[in-house]
Length: 123
Image (cartoon, rainbow, N blue to C red; front, top):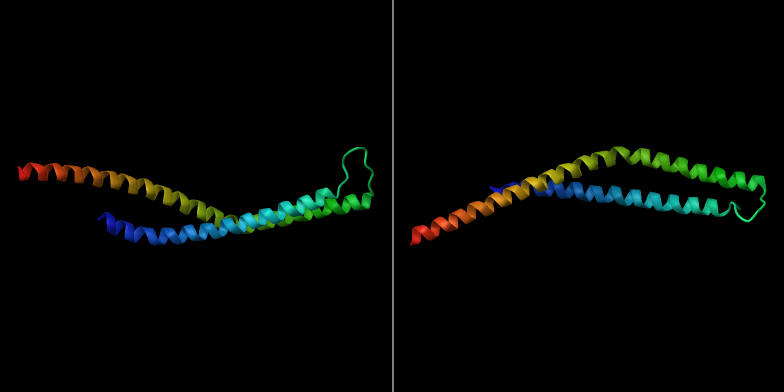
């Protein structure tokens, strides 16, 4: 029974985990690019030691940072439904793991009882 249960449940769950890995990889890449773009933008802003700067340059750097943040918002908005779906699936997978553990514990208990009965019957 447990073997049939695992055969039926495990392959679809592995597919969902693969999808989760893909979404996570896309998210990580997006964040990495965003961090690099923000660092590049902010490094161009002189902000210490009484530095002076051309207001047009500072404005351009800040506009660039805002553009990056808007792109990040769009990127996150587009993958948010996928992430929410994966979150649900991961939650279901965790629940399945708990159920599987309980079934394994029950099997262990039944096997222990069976072994004890077998010893009694063979005596």
